[in-house]
Amino acid sequence: MTRFFLAIALLLGGLTWSQPTESQTVSEDWTERPDSRAPAGLRQDALLAPGAFEVSYRMEILGYEGMKVGTQEVPAILVLRDWDLAPLSMTVQRHAVELRAGILDWLGASALIPFHHISAELADDQVRGSPSASGVGDIEVHTLIGLHDTWPYRAHLIAGASLPVGSVDEAGQLPNVFGSNPERTLPYPMQPGDGTFAFLTGAMFVAENAAGTVGLRGGARIPVGENDRGWTRGNSYDAQAWMAYRFTDWVSGSVRISYLKTGNLTGSDTAMDAFSSPLAHPDLQSGSQVSLPIGINLRFPEGRLEGNRIGIELLVPVHEDLDGPQLTPSSGLALSWGVAF
Image: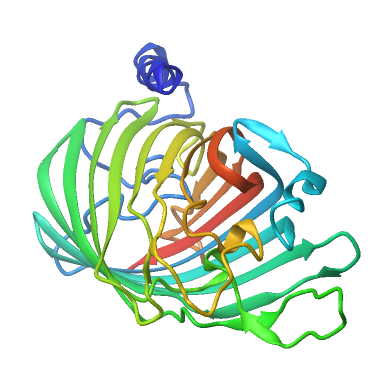
């Protein structure tokens, strides 16, 4: 954590020291710039003007490969001493459509409709299998409450809820050395939904100068109650710091430091054998992760694409401390597109 906060300080200092180039237009008020919005992997980053609407599409592809216990890698052969199956890899695809609206100068709202596709490779010492699950995830609604909006600083709070729309009883064929391969309930990380309501909270601060933008964001996801399968996902907390440098009036580059901490599940699904694989054990879902997303952000100021925004981030994992054995993040990509009207 010490290195995380040191990196935040370096990001903030980097913008202070940077100077505008000839291709940059100096402004002393909020303007539509390629760096005025957060990188592709972040949402609820700004309030819209009253009466304005925005439609956006976001995609994340996250890859996991290999396992860790704490910070140490552990081979599959050791995992199979205690579990029937060892997870070798997993790919998570998240697609989402978000609708946003500006209501008042200090109030905005958004709704997010996600779709998930999750596939994994599991194996015992003789057989491998690749189960997958797809479906709509839990719908999120947010309210954005402005605290400050005078250039060069702005800040707002985020309050919302996750609605239990996504499935928590997806089943698939897990590998079986005996040849019998009936469908069984898939492990917790492969379920598209949580099955419970959750409180969503956060706060964001942004500072801007002629050269670029820095931002800080913190948030939490707190599930409430127990789903009809008998379990509840753990709380999760995240902290973000980013810096975007404006190369021209339509393109900027960004670097972000992302910290995520997740908790273990409470309860368990009685249809799931906790020792079938580490993915199915409710007490092996927690941990902390640090990644370094690097991105490019485009805003088209004129032409047929006027007003459109496109963001791309390459997600680079740098540190994990996992309550494992647990699959380790290996790579990721985030893509966003949005247009306001």
